[in-house]
Length: 284
Ligand code: C2E
Ligand code: MG
Ligand code: MG
Ligand code: MG
Image 1 (cartoon, helix red, strand yellow):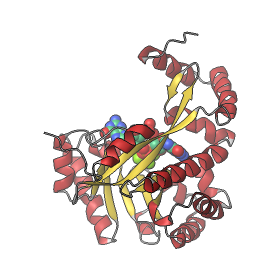
Image 2 (cartoon, helix red, strand yellow):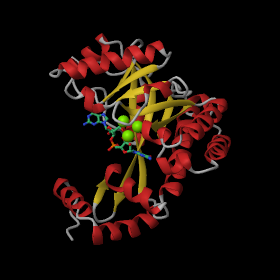
Image 3 (spheres, protein in one colour):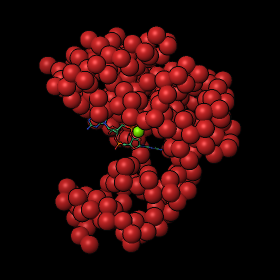
Image 4 (cartoon, helix red, strand yellow):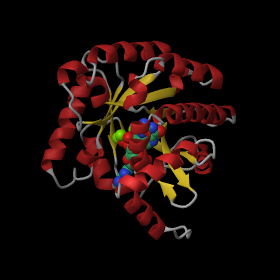
């Protein structure tokens, strides 16, 4: 296999992974040791508040720097991690590392922002989640008010009663909860009023054609109105250009996350980004 790094290499990796079967098994075996070999890392993508134009949170996004295949995006290996149960140790590592990094940034004097961490279904449904989150906050010293957990609709709809109990306990710790990819799952709007959540993240699929598709505008408007009536905040995911930004602003989204402001950043680049009083860069 070619070891050269670059675009071609990733395309090859992706093709291999999608081939399933044998390659998938190899990858699963590789993933087993990835944590110990320190091949996993986090990138952080800013979420910008539209009123203040300041970064309010950083979402931690997992990457696997595979020695032969190069940087593998989470969509290609998280399903494998979920099926094999590896998501539990990997998810723990993500949560702990994200909290530790955020605490370090705060201690080195950067203006405090929250860190948002994605939970997978396997983590959410496993007993002991609340205790685990509590322990990680204690160990790292991060204040709970600086942690936000992202869940998806499907995770909570699976067992609504248990989900509500878990979410309440997480809220009691003082952390924030967001519903990720909102609008793509099997949500029942009726349950939304029972879930103690803070934020809805409008899925990227509604934003990417918002400048050309009136239905996407209609859905964005409907989600924003619903959220605000329920006292929730709304983030638009995947804002890539000024037109999309203007439209989500016009339709009252509270914050945006997307390539327009920033791609997910490595540790070093985050520091540069936070440096300037959290102010999001002004685009022409
Ligand atoms: P997500 O949580 O919805 O994260 C947002 C994804 O959208 C990220 O992809 C981000 O890079 C991408 N994105 C953000 N802005 C834009 C934009 O303007 N244009 C486009 N085209 N894409 C944009 P990424 O990093 O590949 O992550 C994909 C998914 O993998 C995440 O979706 C999340 O569901 C999952 N994931 C990532 N890290 C973790 C993790 O630590 N644990 C778990 N369980 N899942 C994770
Ligand atoms: Mg997310
Ligand atoms: Mg999302
Ligand atoms: Mg997602």
